[in-house]
Image (tube, rainbow, N blue to C red):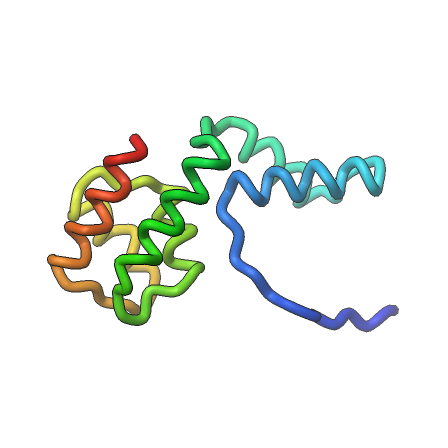
Length: 114
C-alpha cells in the first residue's frame, strides 16, 4: 500500500472542481466512483462565467471582512445567497461570525452578479 502525502491544499468553488474533474478524466481515461458521482452532480448546476466568478471573489475579498478566508468566499460564490438570512445559513457551517454590516456588503456584491 502506498503512502499518500498532501503537498498543498487550496479551496475550490464548484465550477473549478468540475473543471479539475474534467482534466483528471482526460488524463486517467475515467474517474473513480466518487469522482464520477461528484462530476455528475456538478454537471446539473448552471454556473456564472469564469470572469464573473473571479470578479465576485475579488470584490468580496476587497471588503476586508475579518477572518473571512478563501474557503468561505468560495462557499458564498457556490451558494450565491440572496438575503442576509440565506448568508447566515451558509456561514453556520463555519466557526465564523460576520456582523450585519459585513453581511449586507457581501449580499450587495452577490446581487451585482445575479
